[in-house]
Length: 417
Ligand SMILES: Cc1ncc(COP(=O)(O)O)c(C=O)c1O
Image 1 (spheres, rainbow, N blue to C red):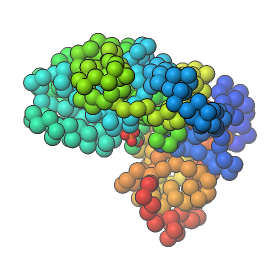
Image 2: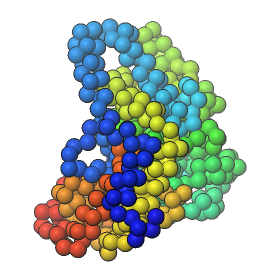
Image 3: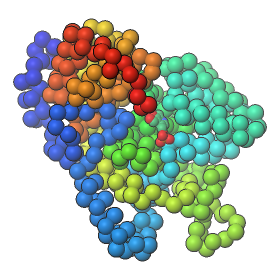
């Protein structure tokens, strides 16, 4: 369809034949809101409320401490981890829920540099998500062994990354889908190149898991981490996940050696002995309520076919770009134009992006802003319709045409953007 032939009616018809159309009713989306921020916080699956009520009132309220055994609380990290694993090409026993993405990154980075003794370089890119860089800086300082974080320029292409790998490189640490622009790294090629240089690879899947097909084992990857609260719809502050390739699990015990990662936590030994397998990446007591909510989001996603999700994601993001470029002057595309290079988000640059986004939110179109000038829109095929895209663009175009976004209240910065 070209822009000239697209209209709301045509998109309503497209929604009516969308193979994912029935999933929208399984999410609680407020009336009058077009939610384009599932890349930051996924919408609430309806099933979460009843499941959490049961967990709170029955498992916690009535069964109390017995629920660690009777309700399977103690197995939640592995059980939900394995379910997430099926979305990212993991084998059973390679993925576990734990802590936050930042903390998990610290664990796998420690493991990766530990498995490459004598090598000092950790290669990443300047526009990686800052927490990844901060955790690497913190670990390097803590180890005190002269590790150096080498930062490639923003959005490096594959050749630039490959050229940066040498025989002093311990780890290549990248986010698969760039949080700011949605650009996708070639996981297979870069993993292979890192291995050819004798280095290991860590992939941050925060904007990939649940958003597009990922196959860590097919790529031969070493370590991965990711968030539960974005495309997995696990709720605010949901636990994160960590994936470690089977062949690396026995070789290194990560340094956050809490009791839940012990081989026998309830033996209460004085000495740490790491658990076999992925359980050694656990640290403290699992966040049961958060993991329970996340399981609802993951279960819902497992009912859908990831290739169908990706197909619709590409269609939604392509449609959005086409409509914005046809009717919203002043917005400059910051995401790759080529769909194969783009995750499930679209970002545009605008000189007053913050105010524009606040004005959009006031009109019910929720995306977010990333400094200095990016307005970011996430597309979640399970609940975003083609008609949402049309309606959102009409509102953006209207705000730009009237200049309505340029009002003082939209310029006042809140803590979270
Ligand atoms: C790529 C990436 N990594 C990590 C994080 C943050 O992880 P956490 O706050 O769970 O530690 C984010 C958050 O948006 C992210 O986009």
